[in-house]
Length: 71
Figure 1 (tube, rainbow, N blue to C red):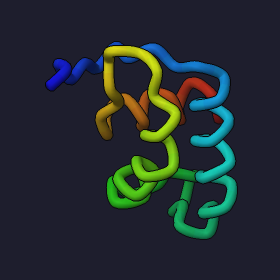
Figure 2: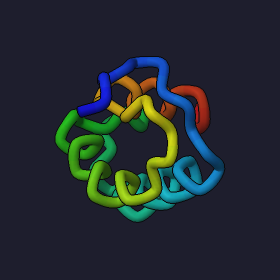
Figure 3: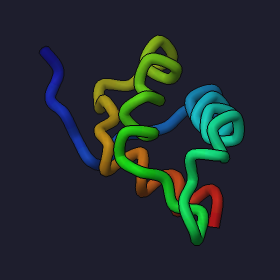
Figure 4: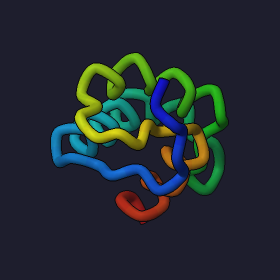
């Protein structure tokens, strides 16, 4: 099983699928536009089929990507 890394590489397809998922679930964002951990966990089935790099994503990585892409 590949090692889990917090410094995962993202492809454009992964980023697009992740941002689209968050857009579709924007009602789940609390005040300030922050999502709960469960929202990020629920994104895994959407983006995991697109993984092509060795470093798999973890919740903290998804939170970091959200901060970089959406703010």
